[in-house]
Amino acid sequence: MPKPGIIGGAALVALIGGAIAAFAVTWRPAIETIEPPAPQSFDPALVKRGRDLAAIGNCSDCHTAPGGKSFAGGLAVPTPFGAIYSSNITPDPDTGIGRWPEAAFQRAMRSGVDRAGHHLYPTFPYDHFTNVTDGDDRALYAFLMTRPAVRAPDRSNDLSFPFNQRFVVAGWKLLFLKKGAYKADSTQSAEWNRGAYLVDGLAHCGACHTPRNALGAEKVTASFSGGDVDNWHAYAINAQSRSPLPWTTDALFHYLRQGWDSDHGVARGPMAEVTANLASVPESDVRAIALYMTSVFGPPTQDRLNQTNATRAEIKSPPVQPALADTPGASIYAAACATCHASDRPLPYSGINLRLSTALSAPDPRNAANIILSGIRPVGGERSPIMPGFANSMTDDQISALLNYLRGRFSSQPAWTGVEQIVRDARQTETVSLRTSSSPDTAGRTSERGHQP
Ligand code: HEC
Ligand code: HEC
Ligand code: HEC
Image: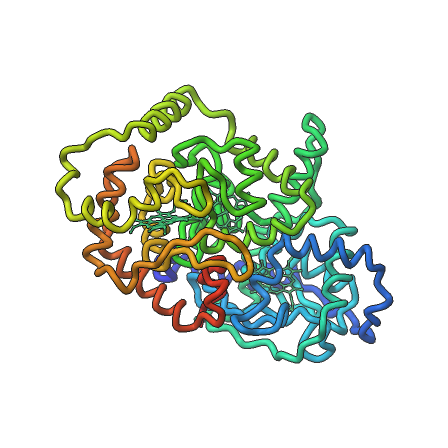
């Protein structure tokens, strides 16, 4: 993740200069307030559609603080420039959007401008939401305006100068915001186009899976090649994917819909929120997303297919690697992990054979360290995967030794570097998340983002 320091002074001056000019160009007037509309004035079918669209857009995950009321905002969303607090988007007339007409809501979604005319930070992913159709914005508005109103004043952001100046966002928009409706590709099926519209728009998959430049904008030339979110790596989900077995439409559908797939394991961290949301929306939308994403991955190359066969063969008869046999990591794996990960119990209640784990083939061990420390906590009221956390029973040295062993034994990628530091960082995040977690029941399915102090 870029640190603020890497933005050179010259770039900063250019940014501020550009922003002042841009402000003049992009200035928007306030939109008149209205009397809050009565909830009964909205068509229930429209409200229902808005509910599903809001789930696809993860609105509640960002707009609900730990232990707070739904959509009342106040969640700290970390950025390299400081924390930005999400807004109250309940229909409270004074602290929420109760006096916003639909046109103001649509302008916020499309151009990142609030009702009063202020630029909003792109942490609110309007660079994706800009493609949402009038009809879908109307449904989202109807859904939000019929939620319980919650009185919760917006918190001010913890940003350093000049990023605390909203006019800076005007410059950012001129450079990076490509407004416009989704343009259908007539050579593709309606289902594919539906998937593309959702992935690039409401579902904003690229917001996590595409790397960002020093100014926090997605690199358009590197779409879906892997990004960072809250001390997790959002893996490459294009031809650069490191997943040991290639993703197919069916595998993607299962993973996105039920949160796990037998060839790839479970979704954790911020991705667990995404899949929990997709579990409740029309199945056809998840199928469309899976279909479109298959074409983003592209057909597997011959190399990839050979590798796939090798991987399947290795699972049947694991190779003996003498160099790893007597390492401390080997004994820890045998004692603490193999019972679940090298057994034949079906997913998701046992672990996958770790030869299939993308976490162990990933460019760095962040996700693997996170999961070994915190495990997977059961979801209240559901039969869901469980893995114990090892934060209290293993030292950083033991976890590092284990990670080095797992990488050597279960992936065909070169050894990781900086493992010790990554384990220390992961433990720090784990401690913070445990301290502030309001509901341990759902913690395994909720991202660190939901647990920010
Ligand atoms: C990745 C986190 C994130 C997601 C996902 C997200 N938002 Fe937000 N949203 C924010 C943040 C942060 C702000 C505040 C931006 C600022 O203060 O400039 C915000 C601001 C807004 C605002 C402006 C409110 C105001 O009072 O100015 C609206 C409206 C809004 N979001 C609606 C939505 C809807 C609808 C969805 C789902 C379709 C959604 N958001 C999804 C983070 C998010
Ligand atoms: C809030 C951030 C975020 C969003 C939004 C998001 N992802 Fe993810 N995604 C992640 C993270 C983090 C992981 C790694 C999870 C893990 O280690 O279990 C991940 C993992 C995945 C994987 C597994 C890849 C592999 O090789 O194991 C797939 C597939 C995926 N995401 C697809 C999507 C799609 C499609 C969307 C949009 C519908 C999406 N993601 C939206 C953060 C996100
Ligand atoms: C009680 C059973 C159990 C034990 C013990 C256990 N795990 Fe797990 N583990 C699971 C389950 C269930 C999952 C979720 C399914 C999956 O993704 O494999 C999981 C997931 C994982 C994943 C993510 C795989 C992926 O990419 O989807 C990793 C990595 C992992 N475990 C490593 C370990 C290590 C290392 C140990 C030993 C220190 C361990 N586990 C001990 C049950 C267990």
